[in-house]
Image 1 (cartoon, rainbow, N blue to C red):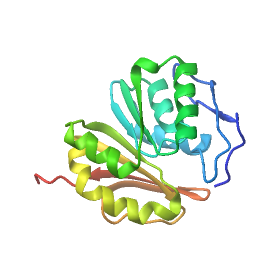
Image 2 (image 1 turned 90 degrees about the vertical axis):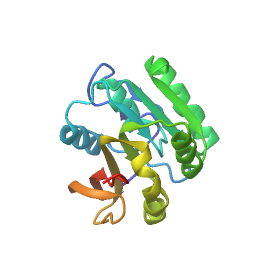
Image 3 (image 1 turned 135 degrees about the horizontal axis):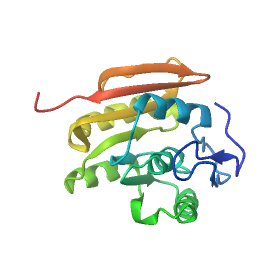
Length: 191
């Protein structure tokens, strides 16, 4: 999917509907398109009161969309310091700093730390650079049951036609242009 130009990403719905999200010029940064975000949240339904982990946050488009629609907390993980700076600015500009936390770290280290602290989430967004997705799936699979609450979902964004194999039971899968969205019920270690 083509990258959107800086300043062109908007929140689709909720309390921050129509507000712009700043997009820094960064190699490989690919904000989730408005069409895909709208489709994801249409399938998810109400997210009021949910806790969210946006593991490859970038601009924060997915997590901020969830906050706008009533999620109670979003933890954003971003490895690039400059992109994380823009993400923090987006959070402050939206006035939702009390509902958001940014961790500047690689996804593996951040996921391990969150598990060690016993933090769980109702919704986990996984949107890495598409070429990394097989590696990310393998690395996250052992941690998913500790990161995602019992009835939580993992939303994976990948290249058109990508098939997830490790994370859990696929409950939704559809292509939107060059993007495939897969929603998964996490494999439970206690089942």
